[in-house]
Length: 419
Image (cartoon, rainbow, N blue to C red; front, side):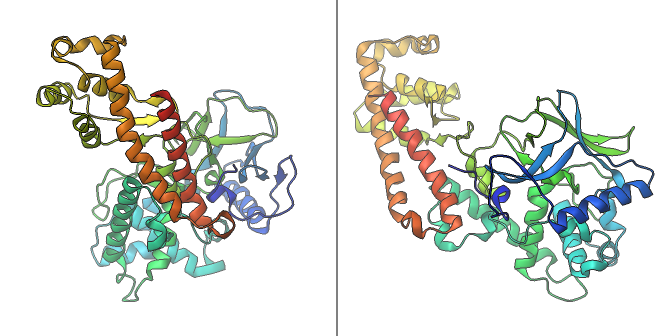
């Protein structure tokens, strides 16, 4: 399965097994602009990385040198960062100050991007804005029907995220000289910021909402793709006056260099960034404690009140999940406790040793697991049945299906482990 989403977005040229340097007009213009503007401020622009097209990910960044742990892979001068100071010192900033608005950093950066995009070639930031995607595959772009294809918990998270974005839009849509900002335009800018911003702590301002988000945009740097295996150290270096990323991985010459967005499962990656990864080690299917309890009660387990007291007092009912390795530790613990007879319950801490409590307990534990797994498998199959045939699916439907299929694979592997 190939990676879907942002990193597979535009290049449908004939591919080879080797990366191909990206010589598109917008990338060439960006590189020339970065070099010219760095020199004008006394910086020597030299990047170890070239934008290139890769067989498995589409556009990414290729190293032209062997990289070792500790090497700085990209360094962006401060004046080429779009920070909150950049926004507040612009025409948009003047409007915000006159109207005495107090907005989030993401709202501010989004408004700035829209303003600069509207300037076209007259914008100082045009070479950067021209490299931004024209559309996204993030959650704000899914139709109401496509949202019904999401697994229930992910659909709830997606709908909550959409609600937050609409609220953010309502707060700013009329501010621009009385001219209404279109939601589609705001959505584009919002997800450009959401998927490309870096952590950057700006000075406090009466016009910036303190929400814990410290964001900036870093041209060129945001061409780097995400990998679960990437280990990096990133931040603003006061000594060099640049935002730097330092790798802790080894990279061969001409290989793709990655950064990490964090330890996220595919559901989070799709909702926030618009792509999924094959074989994502962070993928898991969350199991509801109430569903486990219902499964146990359906098998007429005894002393449920006492067992629930033990489970909840020791916080064993949290972080219940299935992964490719089977039942999570907490989930395994609680089904063994639920399967205990009265004598075993008096020494319930024996489950922490990882040993089999008794053959009877082992059988009942597996039966409890099979009951709630069957329920999740049924729900998953109902979702699978909603999808059109592969040849008829949209790009969005394929992204969602990859998550539904991953959950199905996890459930089957877990089922095998308890039978």
